[in-house]
Image 1 (tube, rainbow, N blue to C red):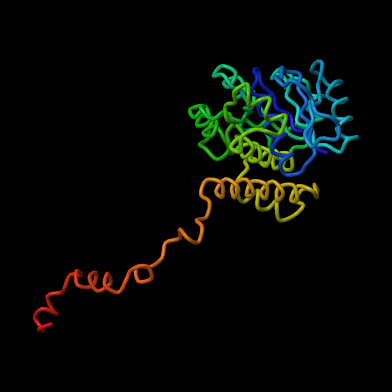
Image 2: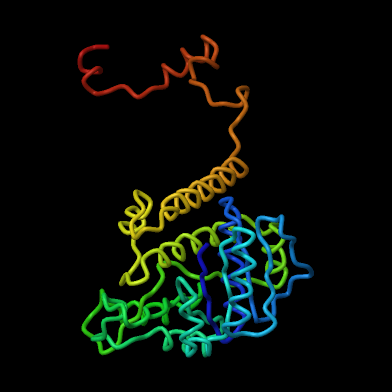
Length: 295
């Protein structure tokens, strides 16, 4: 199992955790969503469900260890939403395969971006095994300015004193009805698609803990082989890609269904009478060369 940590000062962590759990479940991966933050779901799901809610009474290493033990017994990946202040708990962070910071409101997002920064000259997220990798920053869909700022303060940008690892996707804004629908596997397809994309980049970030960025080439490499020793990463990403394709195909088939044979467009010669074809031919423009030639 893998443990994906989402940290925030507001409800964005719970939203991201629910979306990632939904994306994993859509690909057939058993997943648990654990949170110490309020989740407006009316009921949890049982241990036999693909997606389950694992409640944490309080944040900290102990409750997280208990949630991980339950998910390990039930053969689940765990997506846990935690307060941003838990970034100061080194023992708790050591249990996470990847840490992602996010914020729904502007102030919370600014704090999440600041928490994900690290000194550009430090080895994290480089090769030093003594330092834990820095978190990844996830922007919301309406935080274009912050996302641009984070992208500039990255290893791919200019030589700035700080750097930030930015996930190559965004967190959509959810209303309270969709929050509960996600847990009960009845969310709109657009939300499920967003969850699949989030799950894919989170799985990739967990598999490459010291990567400077996640791009198409890196995802392709992970899908092609075991990479860092996590043999199921490629299969997991392929399953997520197949689930996304199924949703897209279903959306296209529903919105643009194929026409029945009786309504398909046919050529003019097949549907016009002989008299109409003669009339159409007589109305065609005649070139000047044909007029000069006497035709």
